[in-house]
Length: 403
Picture 1 (tube, rainbow, N blue to C red):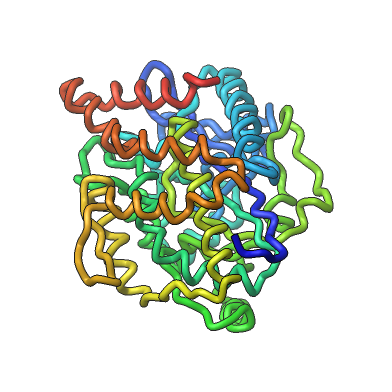
Picture 2 (picture 1 turned 60 degrees about the horizontal axis):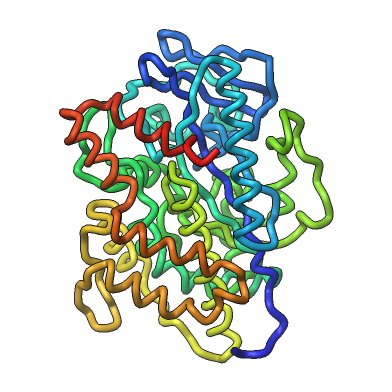
């Protein structure tokens, strides 16, 4: 293994949760930084004022409740933090007679946001009109610490190629408004209708990226860099962690010096119900980042492909998930995704012990053998006679079973 001053490769995970009515199984709530918002029969929000919950997230500050772990030294610590957060979110939901569910989309809800107090969300509606009103998508976001911001840009450029591979494992939104979309990740389709989403271009340097951001800011295209919602982006964990979020209770966590570090944020994943799947995908992302950094410090390059080519693979991941083929641009052939994932697992194997994530990454084999969440949901859908409520019950059970 190459000798060099290694980045921290710290890890943190954010999840978006759905609050579910246990009788109707419909979506019945979301959270803002000010408190829990319950939906009435008309889809309108009403602030409860009873609790403070984690900050709003989603691609644009849309009102999905987000709970994020603190910056963790490894995925083992992240597991404990994520378990604690899910327990807190379950307790919060139960105080309102609700359940929690993690999935990329609700299987049948027709809820449309008609009232929302978030200034960021109001600005999004003004900017994108009807597109944002149909957003009902929930994601999982993984932050990996890279202290050198120039290095973070290099790794982001290379890792774009592997985002479709990750999405093939982390898809959980096959249904939309009671219909089988035929896709593994309909959430991706919803989000990609917004500006500044999807696969980013490659940047020549950190200054090239900062120049792009500065142009958007000077032209009033975005209010701040967080309005760039690519599938992968450089990010400041100080900026991200300075907002309210659940820790051991409803009180928000104060900012600490340890939170002041650069990171890469991978945003391509659907929210996943099974916490073992969450940790497996997060650990694979962390290991992939570490492997790419090792390549960089060995003066080895990972070929950079055009965004439009990578987008071809992303579509295949959105459409077929683990059941399809991705294009191997090196040999210019389509290859079963499972073959490509096995190849990726071999490449990252040397860094697993260093990151203390071998057990979690091994679970990727289970996902490949069993199928991703979208496949599991479809199986329940078929076996139940296309009953969306049965799918919700399955997803709620998976979300809560390990708590």
